[in-house]
Each structure stands twice: as C-alpha cells, then as structure tokens.
Length: 119
Image (cartoon, rainbow, N blue to C red; front, side, top):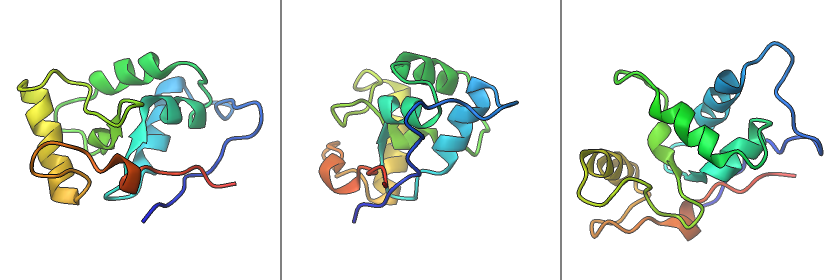
C-alpha cells in the first residue's frame, strides 16, 4: 500500500531558518513505517532538488545512536546503496526486513513500498 509525503511547492526551498540538514531530517522522519523513498525524492522534498548525493552525505554523518529512519532511503533504482556484504548493507537490510519492505533474499519491495508524493 503506497502512501504519500507532502509535495513541495513548485520551487522547493527549505523553510526560513531551517538548515539543509534539518530539512533532510524532517523529510526522512516523515517516511512512514514500511515505506521507502529515494535519495532524490528526499532531496526534492527537503528543498534541495538535484542534490541526492548531498542527502546521502548528510545521512552518512548521523550519529550511530540516531533514531532517524535513515534505512528507509534507498537508491533511485530501489536498491540499498551500500556494497553488498558490507556491515552497512546487512544493517539496512535487517531494518527493512523487520518493516516488511524487503524480502529474505535481499530484494526490496520497491514497487509496493515506494512513497508516492501526494498532490
């Protein structure tokens, strides 16, 4: 079942006083349990169009004990961005398996679990 995130205005911009990092955190925190979003989607919704890599960098700098559901953000092709068999890959896959957005063989349920921007 697909759900939506709030669609940004035509010219997306972070709210006044919100840093790009805070904007990314806000968007990632709004991804529903069991759903997935791409780095590019997060970038657009955070007011950072065409800055998917920046989103990845921001998420890579989260503290280890962060409660932010960073693991719900995947590549535009619906895959985990960590190298297979890396500790990061295994950690993200475990979270996604627990939420039902991944299959035991490691494939993600991208078509079923991708967040769709609402109008």
